[in-house]
Image (cartoon, rainbow, N blue to C red; front, side, top):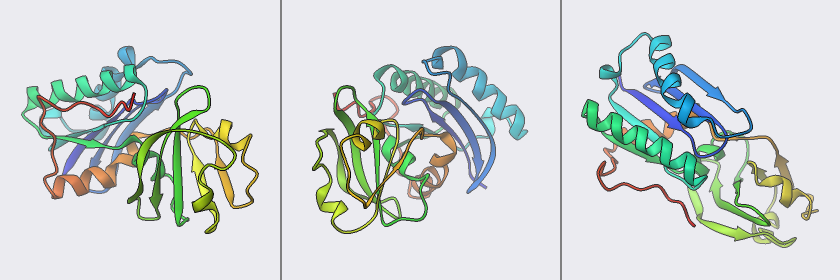
Length: 213
């Protein structure tokens, strides 16, 4: 039985979960509309450990959102994950924030998560229905013709806190916009477990999140 602590702090959500294999044991997620990660993250970790009825020493690995996202949020999450890995002698797993976000959608061929990067820019990537990245992560300046290639092929689901600005300029009937969606620790579980099985671990000393900017 593989137990993984998942930490997601790339945006306004402060989110922590513990899983056993593919099963969610406990989670704590909060979004106050501002960054409270420094105050909340360690409290949430202690809470989910208690709710799951296990100790931190029983965790097999720690997974963290690896970006892109907020510089401050990512730094807090990654530094916390690294500290726990060092203290507990556990491996570190990093998962793309955009893949985490895309995992909220389960009924479509093409999924494009968007993280707001201010003005008309977003961090985005394109995923297939199995959450494989089929167009690389990039910082993209939006215009009305953005993603025209994918939209010409059929329905495309856009989600994340960057979709508001795109929904205002995109009138393509194949575009579906899911608003108020934020990355959550529970959506890291399947990817963290796969990486654990494949021993796809990060170098704890040298790992840095993908800030893009």
